[in-house]
Image 1 (cartoon, one colour):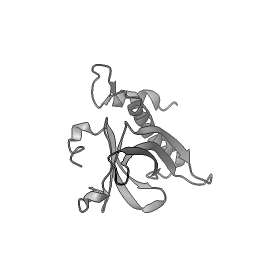
Image 2: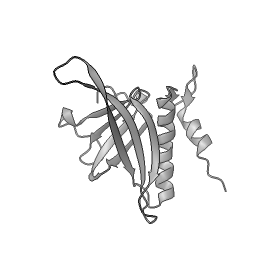
Image 3: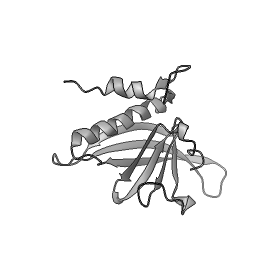
Image 4: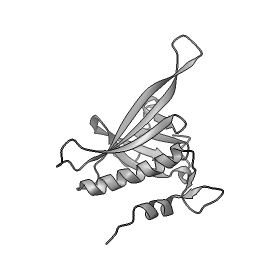
Length: 160
């Protein structure tokens, strides 16, 4: 959590379950370099009890993100899949190998699928830019970086 402690670095933040364990909510933070998630007890702040429960996915290891709908048409949840190949140390060696890792966040904050999908699509869009090494800033644009607010507003405008 120390790397994400500066609030100016956080682009996206929310509390989501991870499929298939829908009972545990995770506090998820997205910065320009990583996705950080930790279980939260009361969904207001992350639990600081165990260092081992902190999870970090670096965008250097992430290869894609995808939004999906639930299995039934009546389901109102939307899923955001993140695909990564993380470096892991080989047993009894100094070498590392890449292991496939897929994490699925469940977006179920809203009563309708359209609202949940819009929220998940916004996260997917930001992550897609970060996977492609395009820096995203919260305010203003400088040196080839994108403004997060204008990026989301230009893509997700509501047409009447």
